[in-house]
Length: 113
Length: 113
Image 1 (cartoon, rainbow over the protein chains, first blue to last red):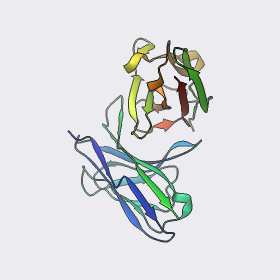
Image 2: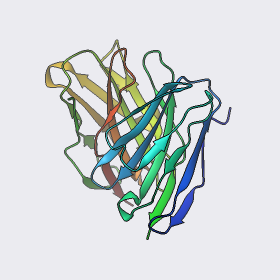
Image 3: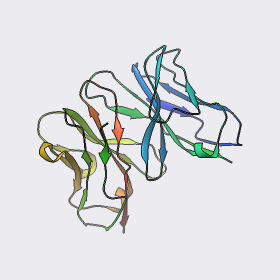
Image 4: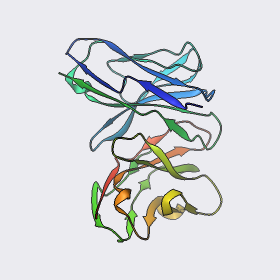
């Protein structure tokens, strides 16, 4: 199993550009989520999905869109990048049964100039 | 809303010193508790978890954590740290029967050789 994979690992965008961060898992997990990690603030939930076709907002959803057309894939779209979106982004997946251990991808370091 | 507090932002220790990192949460119900570790340049990995049974949990690399329900705490300990323990340590909590995971802000541990 590859676990949770994310691409790209690094990305630099100019303000106003759009892009999609890719996330895939091969563990047949129903639950997938996107977090951003900022110094001193820990991990904050952006969007999550409890299954194909179902998504919902987390703590900090503004400026991001997601879709879940398959169980495996959960892409995160930045609609119009802003410097405030400079961060490290982690995708995670977990089973919908206890203890809900999360498996994290390697992260994407995004810089918006 | 539940929250997770990690009181130490940055801890600096010499090799062989003992380590204790605090984690407190504010959720009153049954919880699952996790410690994750992020080594420099790597992604988050599970260090240990508690969801039932013995409140003293053993993890990888000599780490352990004790769940004290009356104190809403899940502190991480290691009797003797090594230089290779330099990393970011993140405490996480999620309620039973729920994927909602909340993370602490993280504690950066620097171990001097």
